[in-house]
Amino acid sequence: MTNDPRPESSATPTPIDHTPAPAGPSLAARLTAEALGTFLLVFGSLGAALFAATFGIGTDDSIKAIGFLGVALAFGLTVMAGIYAWGPISGGHFNPAVTVGLAAAGRFPWRDVGGYIVAQIIGGAVGTTLLVLIGLFGPGNWLQQAQAGGFASNGFGEHSPGGFGLGAAIIGEILFTAIFVLVILGVTHAKRGTPIMAGLAIGLTLTLIHLVMIPIDNTSVNPARSIAAAIYGGPDALIQLWVFIVFPLVGGLLAGWINNALFDRRGS
Image (cartoon, rainbow, N blue to C red):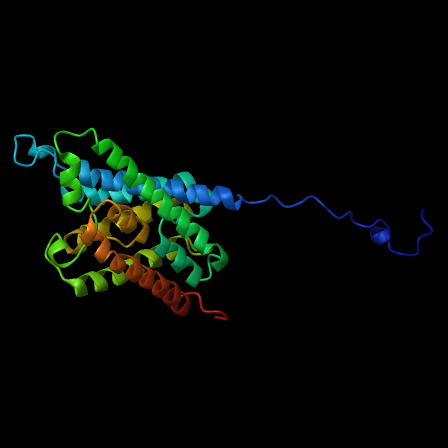
């Protein structure tokens, strides 16, 4: 029996748990994951484009060439692998347009956007640099020919695989980047999304985008990929690079705003 006039259930205060909540990955770990994922995307997909897309064309080994279907699959497979490997650490952006789109949608802090973009550009540049190092030991003048051909850079006009002009590149990059980011926002939504299948859905979407866009401008929808290729693609690739930086970012921003306006309106 106690002389405490309070109800017995409140006589003993409930202890407060002062154990700190588990901390998420550090910023350094997230930036490293973004660099690694972008490296994998660029190294694997542009490696497929440079080494395997036209392998053996003009000889009896031409059947071994993967063509642009194989290159499209390489982009999808590499981004899917990166998402499953490093997505739990950094979110698996591997693309400045995705980072900007997620920030515009309120899914990512604007204060971290700059760091993510720098890490992505570095990762992509390391990817193409290693491709160049491999090419140094290629047959004959393979590396010189690859660079003369633009080193899988994006381009329009005379540098478009199908001869499409600037307007086609601008429209395509805005539209398909927006579609890509909208898919990402949908499959990763906290309530409506399907996290287990997110990597597969995102990878297949990127494959589809490349199937459509490769003939138009060699497909960017990712400024880090475009910068990485243009570094070794020669003066023309660098001159046209602005298109593949500006308009994928525009597409990402539009996707973030459209997503909020249609699906995640505040107060609705």
